[in-house]
Image (cartoon, rainbow, N blue to C red; front, top):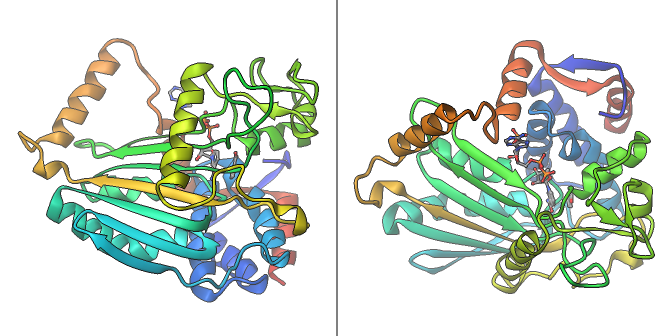
Length: 338
Ligand code: NDP
Ligand code: PYC
């Protein structure tokens, strides 16, 4: 959070406030509701790079005419295990919401189903897209590409996006196993937050405009670039995301759009792929129990922090105490809501 002092408010109140803001600034009631829930969910779980921090970017992107906050997604049932959605230059989350019932029924019927979203803008964390599938007993994997700001391994210039991968799986007696990670060393949002707060970023995160390694987030943002995590391995995963989220869906590559004609535009105009598997079709049909066994074995060898634990802990606290929002940020939000 950018303010040192924070206030708390009930989750439902934050959703309502955000819904008012999005609707007042160009989104239809349905789209505003989906975006507000997504954004409040990230804030609730302490995913601050994709919580209310993103509100000005959503608003300026809609105001610039770059993204259509009123788009109505078109869902196509193309094969027994394949659903396509044209998001109509709107946001990806309403497209997922529109296609979700068909996707789940296909996954339950065929054991696996793919959702390919194109012509969409994803400006959020990816885990809220996959976690609900695991809560219904399904396994889900999603990838989304973003905007050119990452130098591929061996390259001289940025080409890939920060391209996250999110995965969720049911786990008997526990919250779902969920991880969600950018394939860049840092998410672009975290670089922006570090720059705003005058902090440095870890070595190996990025380069300056001359291609020299830097820990200065402003140098990364001002003509520099991020690096993939884990060298050639993260770079290969980022390439895979470009192929699945853009080439396969029919969406833009991260380098395939240019928002310079739309001052204020910040949302990447790309695509998203979601694969949903019904483990009930698997041999043995005890997937959630096997998940729990794996987690327990990890704990026995000393793992005390699973991916997702920090979010679940922050969520549990927010459910009791309310969602934390910086005090100045909250007054800015209230002003935006009118
Ligand atoms: P992090 O590096 O913070 O976390 C990645 C994953 O690792 C999370 O599941 C996290 O769990 C887990 N984790 C973190 N630290 C540990 C640890 N010490 N031990 C075990 N697990 C750990 O995320 P990123 O910076 O890579 O990404 C941040 C967000 O940015 C993501 O939500 C991503 O979707 C979003 N993003 C969105 C983009 C878009 O185009 N829409 C583009 C790029 C990023 P936990 O959540 O519990 O901390
Ligand atoms: O944090 O890298 C990021 C990001 C890109 C698009 C939305 N978030």
